[in-house]
Structures are given as structure tokens and as C-alpha cells.
Length: 130
Image 1 (cartoon, rainbow, N blue to C red):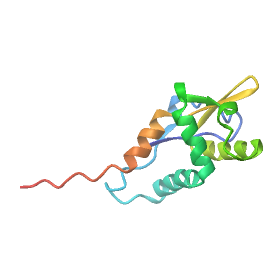
Image 2: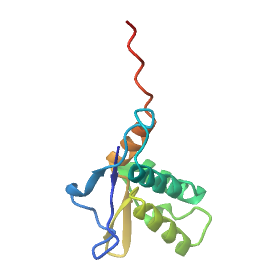
Image 3: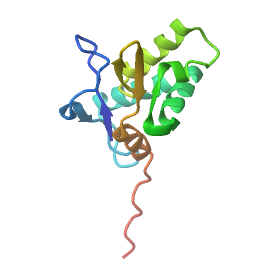
């Protein structure tokens, strides 16, 4: 699985270069996770454990063209500052990448994140029958 790691320093919130995609975790059924793998996966699931964050993530992931302006996804029943807070948490967890274009910020989910999330739940291969 891969998770896009987003920097929180200068330049944070912009699309990271391709070299910033790092492996996260093997499928859960493949082997027990190492401590660092479990911490990265837990951060991802913790970020998605909030219903508002899950709705925002889903809104971005399902938006036509694969990216969404914050102006198009902010109607989730909370104030704009709260939406910004939740989007920041999703970025910090490596689930979203963002890009400022003038006044607006556009968000997208890296394809490797969705594939990696799905890969975490790949079943263990069936044992070979002699």
C-alpha cells in the first residue's frame, strides 16, 4: 500500500513530487504489521473515522474530474472553518493533496491512496492444495 506523505512545512498543501510517495503497509492478511506500518495505517483510519471527514473524502474522490474545489464540497453541515480543519486533517493523514489556484484550494485523492486502501484488505492467498 502507498500513502502520499504531505509535508506540513513551507510549501505544504501543494502536490508533492513523485518521490514523496512512500510504501505504507502490506495487506493485513499477509503478515502482522510492524509498529511504523500500524501507526501510518491507524492515522489514515483515524482521519476517516470522523463522519464529516469521511463525507469530505468521498466528495473529493467521487467528484467529476477527480478533483474538487473547496467551494464545491463545503456543504456538509458544518461551518467553513470546520470544513477547513477537517480537510487539513485529511491532508496531514496523507489522504488528500491540495493546490491553491488564486482564491480557491482544489483537492484530490492520489490514485495510489485509493488503491492502497483497497489493498490493505486483500485476502490472504489460499494455501496450495497438494
